[in-house]
Amino acid sequence: MSKLFMLSGAVWAGLSVALGAFGAHALRASLEAAGRFDTFETAVRYQMYHGLGLILVSILLRQLPEATRPLTWAGWGFLLGSLIFSGSLYLICFTGARWWGAVAPLGGTLMLAGWLALVWAAVK
Image 1 (cartoon, rainbow, N blue to C red):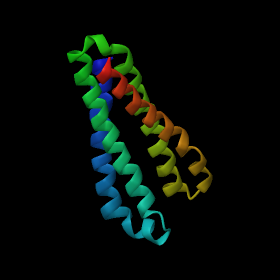
Image 2 (cartoon, rainbow, N blue to C red):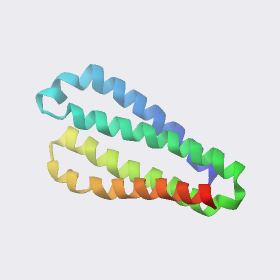
Image 3 (cartoon, one colour):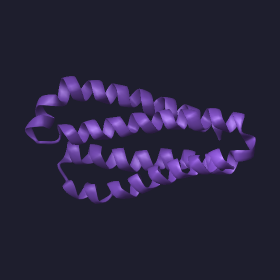
Image 4 (cartoon, rainbow, N blue to C red):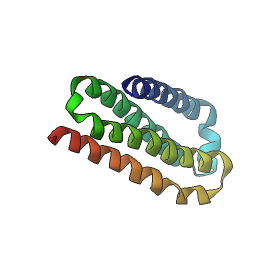
């Protein structure tokens, strides 16, 4: 599981850098004209935070074998939560379909659950 979280975290963080640069340079004018640039920036920011969180979980899985269960929960919460949260925001930005905003809280809840699982790992 550690390798999966390391790989997905590195890909997720790297992709956020690429998307952030693409948004800031190639898409900025169109996103601002549509009033969606802030939404795009939020998606990129949370994607980066949770990509780094996945890398942290991967490292901690190797260092704290007694906390494997909560760390695994944290990793899945970060991965699925940020995929759903940031993904729904990207879909709003690129399609204009605001109903994707109703999906974002599910991703946010999973990300928060991931952070709570990390707390659980710390006190275990």
